[in-house]
Image (cartoon, rainbow, N blue to C red):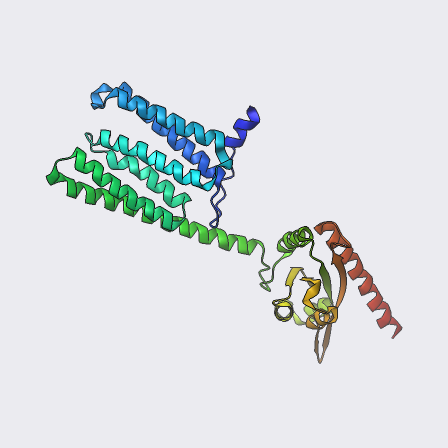
Length: 334
């Protein structure tokens, strides 16, 4: 029981602009229904408000039913339940709005539904919901209010709800853009613009899970430390940017290039992409009057030679340093 309850209270509220966080949506919906139940119960206990206790208790029971449904189903809820739950909740709000028109506070009840829709629903569905709410509220006002007061109250209420929806929608869009930028920065090397180690590990896992044969090649630059020490860090960074751009253009459409940090680059590509190891080495080479940059590499075929991303990186790293040692021996022998 404690695990069941803890899972419903300790919800990841992270925002993903491309999909609905159903656990968070269910938690908020349950809280809103519980709030409606509490409000209905208080209204039933305060006869001075002039609202029939029987109607308030009926709303109390329906609100508890809605809260219970969300608590039980929680993140297993299908998408239709999210929309159906909003329709059910709006029906409760509509009855409450009709009863509350004597106090002039009916529009406040719809505010919570509009906020919820613009936070959790796709924009188009949220706009449809807003239009539906304004239409339903017009009917409520037409029944509950004198004809000469109806239009002005309805226009004011509709403008208020529309403004709230637009503000919440704008804030949601800003949050979505901030999340996307943050996610991009988290997986991007700031110097070269290539994907970083975190992105590599995720995509190695994906390549291994797919079962499609891939080649993973890890490279380390020879001569870069001397170049960086003699030319300065600004020149060294410019060289890394140039080599990263050259590597990205080489593998574009055939695989992915990454920078792990320092002077380490790597490439992951499907074996059927016809990308040659020597082409990768050539892309990471640079020669000038006073410098020569070459690349040592270690490569591995996936999933044949490694079962997970850590093993793939470890094996490729070992082969790269073995290749680097062999290059040093050849230079010494020459």
